[in-house]
Image (cartoon, rainbow, N blue to C red; front, side, top):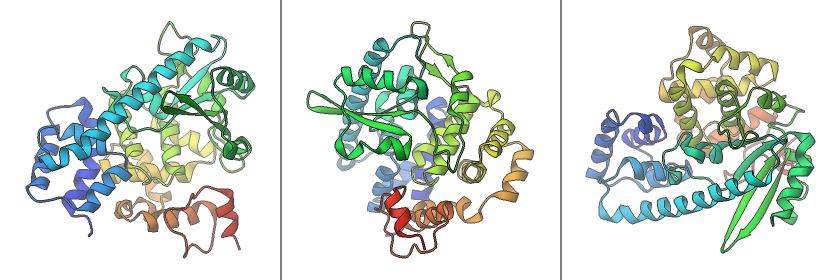
Length: 351
């Protein structure tokens, strides 16, 4: 059953972190949710909420509006994620104390956004599965040894991950739970994109005096990385990612220099990903971009990728973008459950 226009609109609006900062306009979204539940939302709507990792934000925004049969569906996930994220935060805070002050570390994505309520006011609102940390390549072995000393291990199937994907994936048993940590020494594969991770450190600053080596990148570098990251991961893979960009752009509006972001993208060979992500953000959220940036987007964007109807047809969209990114010629037999970024799949479909 296809999504209705109301369901699509609610999914897009739910992804916006704008509502976390402005409670009064949120009532407009809540009115739409009331209308949605005056009938029954489609199973596809519920599936899309979970696929795009919006179910906890939806539960938060729709407090007091959900019929009883839907409350447990969302509430249990919300409470469980809050518990998991609290474990992530405790583990991150524990690691901070064990890393020497001389070694800078940048938390990335989810852990950065929930730490000290940087973006999310409650940990459980952000669905996440791991802790992402960026370190300088020269400090990599030192950090790795600290992790090993603290009961982290590298699962056998991930032992060669560093050579292909510029990070290690480590796990740690914590009671009945398993903590997953991705340790990055780069932000892209330099054979195709040249994202300079070292410059992130040079423009970063500590948020907390008691932890001078725990750095957050400048707002412009953060937005650039998130736009690149969303573009690299198929743009519409998760509306969660796009909503976070929109939220940060809104929160730090006066500090953001889109001309810097465009210039950096051209320098680091990430332009096509950045342009298409910006086009998607404009289409979904009507983000106000400078005229000079809009002119560049209108000239260089791929119209297929900026057409937001593809957010609802993930298989077609991902197949098209996968072919677009890697120059493949035959995508007819690929299902949307394939691990798209693996070398095995890329090689299999090359002619």
